[in-house]
Amino acid sequence: MASEAVITLTEANFESEIAASSVPVIVDFWAEWCGPCRMLGPILDELATEQTGKVKIGKVNVDEAPNLSTKFAVRSIPMLIFFKDGVVKDSVIGVQSKDALAKRLAALA
Image (cartoon, rainbow, N blue to C red; front, side):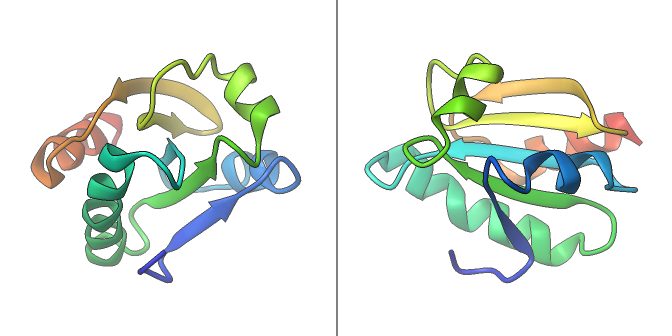
């Protein structure tokens, strides 16, 4: 992971990171072997760096956290789930532009 602004989420820290967040959270469900996931990574890193303090971005490796993948019905990756106040507000599958992600975040504000 290139950016320190992006948090690695696991089954152990997922609930506390999401529920305790005072800002909207984007959770990226991804895998190392997924080409589109690797394309999305730098976009999320850039967004996390630019919006530090306004948004939290976390990544869940579906191979390492299968229970989270099941809980959120992740069938295709990359899948982004948007949370506000610990509640799922939106989701999208596939690579998204930084502008498209910023617009979805603005809709949560």
